Length: 140
Image (tube, rainbow, N blue to C red; front, side):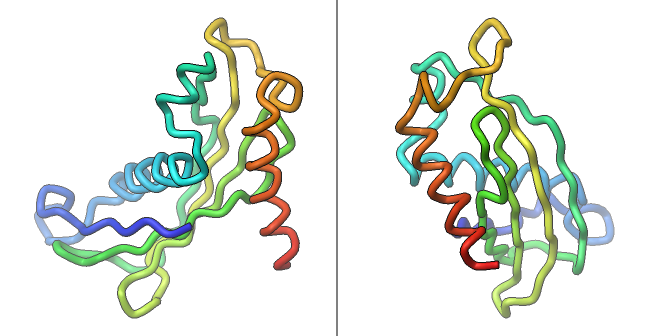
């Protein structure tokens, strides 16, 4: 799924280049949008008693962006086996040129910090994330 972010002036540094930390913020924006589109926005997750902390983030910066550039962020489920969700982000400019390739890993925990048995406790979410992971596996 694709999410589009327009670079804001405050996201740039003194040289007019987007500060590297913003790409991680955009990953979160795209992840929140992705979850909402698959029917599991953060309000629904929290209502179900699920928290999803970030475990790992990695970014490979390919090309800089500047104020008012549009960044197209394609989110895919790289791997999902129940407790951990691994996402991949492909960020491109309007011309389709890669600006950043990134990944993030997340856990699914209950409010006490224990891992959620997703398949048993939340089969609908387990199924939709598993299907998205299977889509990606089928393409490679």
